[in-house]
Length: 119
Image 1 (cartoon, helix red, strand yellow):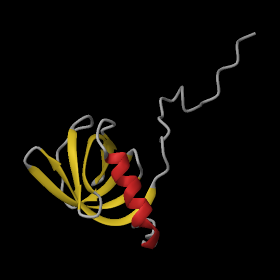
Image 2 (cartoon, rainbow, N blue to C red; image 1 turned 90 degrees about the horizontal axis):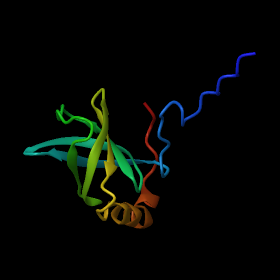
Image 3 (cartoon, rainbow, N blue to C red; image 1 turned 90 degrees about the vertical axis):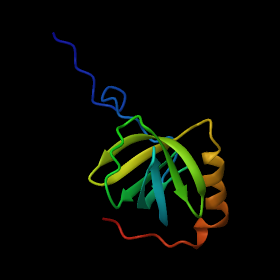
Image 4 (tube, one colour; image 1 turned 45 degrees about the vertical axis):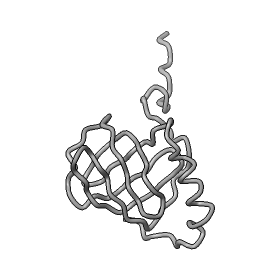
């Protein structure tokens, strides 16, 4: 008899689950990669990362260090995790104070922002 194969799970598919829930927002920001800055709209944000719809390509590869500048939250340093169809996903640098900045934003400002329509 052959052994039964393991069911497909996140661990054997190498899929990383998010560490914290994402919340939709209506913020504008800029992603800075070296000397280039690209404007975009923050799609969602959590204490561990952020996703933005960019207005133009930024030409940063996964693993590149970038800086997100947002008037409502401040400057957030992170690493590009993915780029797809004009959208970018960035994981915040754990040694920065990004988690505290995002938590402060949610505590004081996010309660007044209404959800946006889904794509």
